[in-house]
Image (cartoon, rainbow, N blue to C red):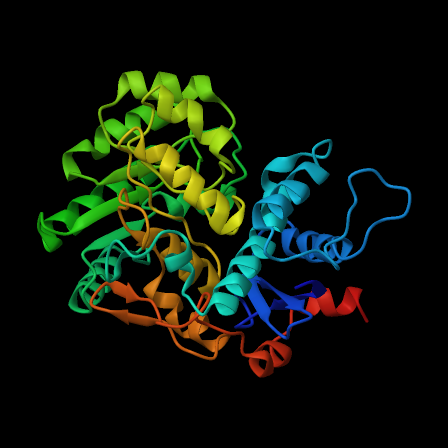
Length: 391
């Protein structure tokens, strides 16, 4: 079997939604694999889409530039390392691992279809029948509406919910990191919101906070201490991801459960945080960390430290489905992230709808990943920036 083509699709499911990036890998045996490598913010979708096209053919006279067309799609690990090392001087984390993610998912999908097995069977078989989920609640700027949304989702069967209670003020610096501070009024609002949620929902519902890396060490320490009384499952990304030393300082000064990982990209990135006991949960993103292959390796690494894994999702439905296949196979799962508000968008781009019931996702009993892209919908909901560049 040989790879014959590699195609990339950018789509905006709704006018103001993020762009999602999907890839398809064709073979000479008429088996096509599908993957996702969505990357949001700063034009990342355009950069990744262009780079996928570069991966097709060998570049003339360029080192490390072997193309994918003509290669055997069964050589998943070799192709993974080939793409990862190809951009080693540019930076293999983030950029290269996102490229690798979409291709890797598609190759696993091909192998599953070829062997007539679901991907999780190829990874070692199912350890469970369904995958527990957690969802997001909003709006954080209106306490009563946020509580109402939480109660609505609980009525649908969700038992774990996440939000960013600091976002009414901090959204403007989301992931940008300006000075690491928050005003007294915004911090007080966050505390009031979490207090009302816990009081209204009781102690059986799990709550998580996502701070999106907006704070310096002193601010993060203060906020973690203020939030300890709400019995959180975790406090996520209180700090930017670059500094290991800052996480050491925070760990020394708070007892709250900490979670990181959406901007950590490989097993090598997670290793020191696990070795030093700096986190209680990790959340790699299967679209950014290197796909099914690397998510499984990271999960195995975390298992040796008895740390639960909870894959991040800020993307489309293949992110969720591919992550679920890995989570079917590993023991140290917490929950898989998704957003109940986005189910309509998820289902719009795939031919078979996500099977989500009572806070769990059930995987289809089909070969490969078990889903296909809805090309009619994708072609009618293009990313206009991508279209302009390619017109």
